[in-house]
Length: 133
Image (cartoon, rainbow, N blue to C red; front, side, top):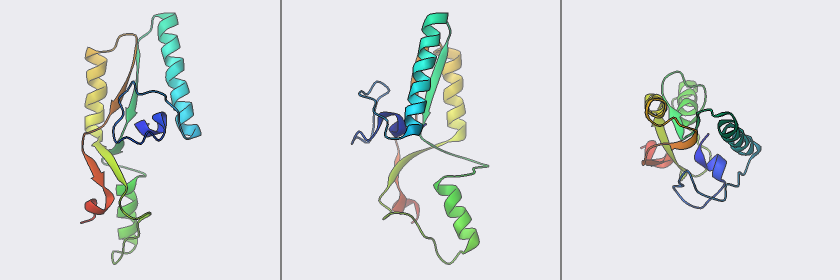
């Protein structure tokens, strides 16, 4: 889940894992946050280990949705124009799928004790207009 889905609209570009209050702005974000709370409870009550990951916008092969997929599909349909939603000033962090796998594996091998949660993204914020240049 992208971190903004869990934290709500913080007004910040970055939010740490411990940013509070966590006030999701969608039912999707609320359900993800509730699942994290349930995992935490199980780890505490039954001496289990688990980690929750909050991914930025994941990109890579075999995508079925997202800005890259949508743009590619639109350009394959009509390469003479590209219609975008909004004014192009939207900004997001993107992360490649193998970086996600490496992050999960690193936590599994080195940090999996009790319950923990991680924002997984890059420090690079991309503005849509600049991606299209």
